[in-house]
Length: 450
Image (cartoon, rainbow, N blue to C red; front, side, top):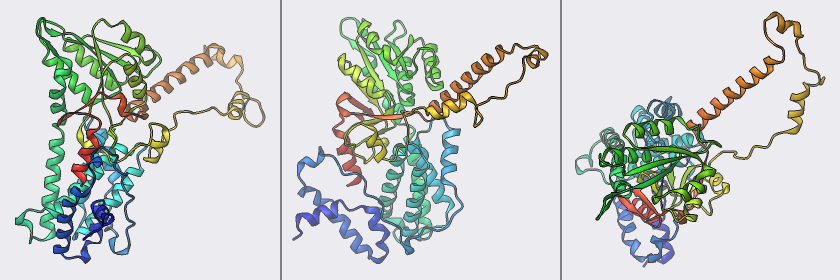
């Protein structure tokens, strides 16, 4: 009879770490362990479904016999090319595609080599990103799928050589990536009743949708709702909350989304974040907030653009429901202890929101370098060029300021800063599998991993 501690050890065993050393075990032993792993769940307390799952254990160090085969494949460059060339692709799917290309281009002969290669390049890819959380959702999911494929191979491939099995897995993985692209359209269908509401007496009731951030899923949801909105009446309006201090500058993704909605006849407006409380109190129609997310953590919290937490707090203060539109493949095995920068740092995020100026360097730039004197050209130089000496610095300053704003805007579009929005601010998650509460995230992860 096994003790309770033995059962817990087996059921929480990291499968990938076990398979690294599986070459020394027979297939009968391996199958016995995996068959034991499922019934053991009945011995665990029922509170496990709602309790937080422990964070992903650190991968076992690769020893001499587990060293991956050498390859010239650049997984980081492949990932960056996918993100740059396909504006609709998400980081988790781009990470999975990069790993599929890695396996397809590498001469692998054993399961141990495959898992070692996957582990090494996954860590390399995650270390290259300022925000590795969305990518970890893809790399972990692909690793789990790979292990399941090795253990549950079709009967026709049981006695086949490894190259045939490898080709089968790569083909099935590519199909998974292709099917993942349909998630947004499914989410849009599930979200439609939240946007276009039917009233028994008056027909379609009017609502106002408040959005924030550059979410492709929210854009797909609103576009789908606009295309299915009754032509005789406006069923909803859209307010886009911007990060900037004024309502004029919006990101390129937000601008494209608003233009598409306007072309479909949906009234839109942009307001700064600090104007959201006033806007919500002045609306005559009941509003609701739709947000996207780059990742969903074990406790139901979301990782999204910086400012989402503030939007959630404002929405709760005005009793406005907040729904998050997100694909289920963005669920990650990370449990935050709070919603501050310390949790993001523990998950590998590198960002500096507060940047203090250096008075010493500012003084040096004002008064020159070591000698404290700036070299300045005489007024007759500017006169000979037909320019005013006093006007030149002002023009250059304006040009420099404009260039700096363009650089900041481009950087913000490409890789915005992020934060954690706690689950108590979220009314529901709208996924391709349907509507779920934040408490259901841990249950979904248990189904996937155990």
